[in-house]
Image (cartoon, rainbow, N blue to C red; front, side, top):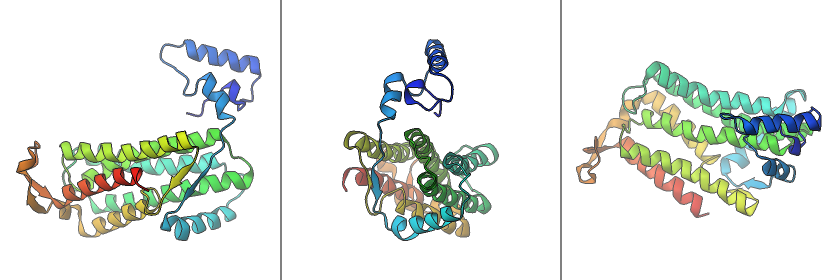
Length: 268
C-alpha cells in the first residue's frame, strides 16, 4: 500500500533506479503495484477535501484529538499513528478467531467485549489524530491519505464480523446481509468522494457518531453479557432462511443496522 513509485515523487532513490524497480515489479508474476504509473502521476495532484458534520466529531473527537496532538512530539510520524490505530482493530479479530472461535454464535467472555470497545475507541481517536499531526508537522501527502483510508477500509470489514459474533446473529444469510450492507455503505461514500472530489460525512454518520454507538454497545454488552442478544423475539420461519426459525434481538438489531447503514449512504 505504501510502495514508492517514481511518478509520485515519494522515493529517495534516483529516477532511473525507481523506474527500473517499478518495471521489475510490473513484470513479476505475483507482485503487482498497488498504484500504476498513471495513478502515481495523478496522486501528486490529489488534494483532500472533506468535512464531518457528526455531533460526536464536533463536540468530542475533534477537540480531544486536537488537544492530544498539541501535546505530541513533532517527531511522531502521522503514519505511525495510523498504523498503531489499525493494529488496535486487528488485535480483537485475531483474539476472537484464534482464541474464542470462528462461529458467529456463542458466548463471548466479557473481558473480550470490553477490550473490543476500548480498542475501537483508541483506533477512532488515532484516526482523528493522524491527519492533524500531518498538518501540524507539514507531512501531509496523498500517499498518507491512501494509507489512512486503506486501513479504514479493512477496519470497516473487521467490525461487522466482531459484532455478528457479539450479537449472536449466527452463520446464516442475515450475517451476510449485514456484512454486505456495511461494506457497501463504506464503498458508496468513497465512490461519492471519487466523483465529487469531496468527502462529506453527514450528521449521525456511521464513522464518528456510529463509533459512539459501537463503543456504547460494547460496554453495555460487556456488562450484561452477550447472551442477551440471543433472546427470542419473533417467529422467523416465514423468511425461509437456513438456521433462522426464531428472530432474536441480535438478528433484528443487525437487520436494522444494515438498513440504516445503506440508507444513510444514499440519503444525506
